[in-house]
Length: 134
Image 1 (cartoon, rainbow, N blue to C red):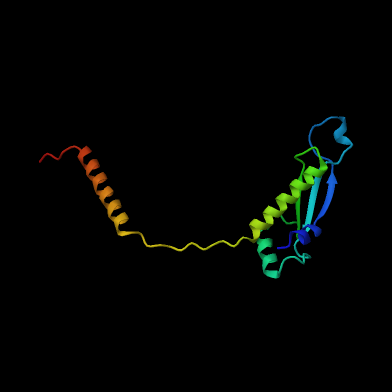
Image 2 (image 1 turned 30 degrees about the vertical axis):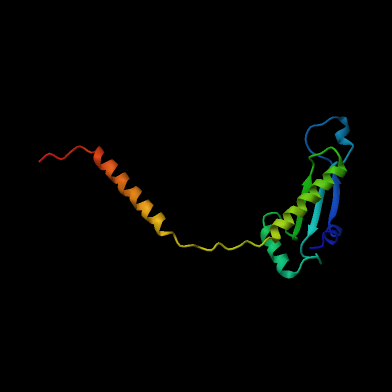
């Protein structure tokens, strides 16, 4: 994956942060919103695009646009770096192929130990009962 080519496909927009602040908060646009269109990307092949669409299924807009935002810092530059880093880590996570679990046979010793514990537990509980008087 070519990170520089991927970064060139990103679109950023600076907006005003929400929440309380002073007089300065109404003048500066420090929150950064990142836009990325998976469909028009030339960095990924069709298989990767499908995998990313499935991974981001609940985050994509109706037009297939991925939108991420960061308003954590008071600096627009820092917010841009944070949102870009988060985007790259999400892409990396989305492209990771899950390794299928291979089922293994339960060892004989484990089965034997489990049955032995069951038998002991049964005896303990049987000894708690009142004795039968005929």
